[in-house]
Amino acid sequence: MSGKNRYPLIALSLLLTLGTACGAGSSVGLRTNTSHGVENARGAVSDAGLKLLFEVRVSPSSKDDHGFLPPGRFIDDAKLAGASILSSSFSGWQSGFDAVLYQKLTANGMLHVYAYEPRTPQPDNAPPPAAFTTVNVIGGMTGHGIEFGVPAGYMKGKGQSSTPSGVTAQLAGLMASLKYRHPDWNWFDVKAALRSTAANYPKGYDPKHYGYGTIDYPAANALVDAQLLPLFPPAAVQLPHTGAVLSFYVNPFQQTRRVADALFKFRSPPSPNRAELSLAQLVSLGGQLLYLGDFTKKGNQANFRIMADEKAWFVWLTRDAAGRFSRIEPYSVLGPVLLKAKQQQLGPRLTPP
Image (cartoon, rainbow, N blue to C red; front, side):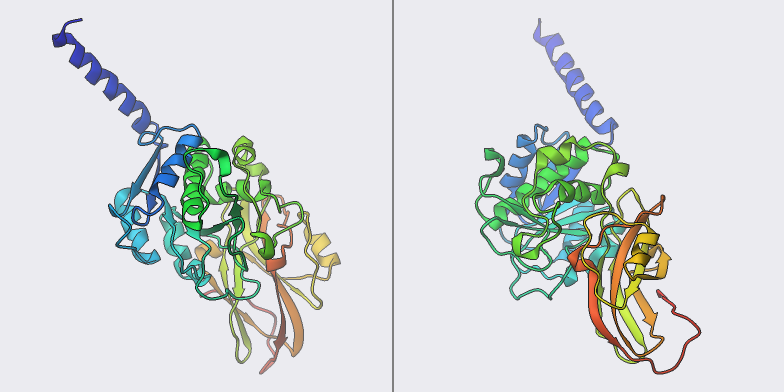
């Protein structure tokens, strides 16, 4: 073949390749906070059998380890880069990030993977985040609000690491790969697939053992239908209360199967339950349904008007279209709360802003 004809054919081949990758609209952009961990993220994509650039695009926010971006600014950077999954392989995790940045992340269709290396102990019973994902290397720090653990040397490929930084970026690369292979899933579906196949899922969330535990990427990748993934409860936090109002931050777990968020009140603490529940089953356990609605349309703060002096426990759950509610995880049970009513109300009301 002459040089005159060879180059047009090469160019045509490249255009066809680019057209296939870009035209499908399914490539996933992953942004690492500085270049810290970027090679682990890229290695994880390769370990998952995907092509960098065309299928999962991994880019750092800076060329070296300097220039760390706080979570809010990092969202803006990722948006400019066309990325939908972010990775921060740094210490300084705070459970409050999820409540403060939940709406900004979800409005942009983003997920932020963050190393579980808090500088101070996290609040007791802090839930695993909804719009973030927290992870640490097995053998490292664990505690309230952690979501996953990754063993040192996981998958024994290019993405493997023995450090919190490395496994954080590795998990981000694997999550980006799951999203690419399941284009009809949203990021909550990706999280649900990883949670339901992780080591601790059969017995329930355990903050002493890395939350949902060791991930199983091949098992999560083998799942197909988002409507068959287990339901997971919102990431809900009770705020300090005064007077006759009890407030919560409620970050809905917006997986495809979910249609509503629900608040139940119990007069005694319900035990964690390993199965999804019907309304009748929840009532039989002592639950009183106080609220059923969609917090994605109303902001993520709820205010409950206290009716009478009492001691109560509150449980936030997710409901699907068939009327099934997510199982009760240990972090779902908030209380006991000593309620003091200033005046009688006509009925319990939950009034999102």
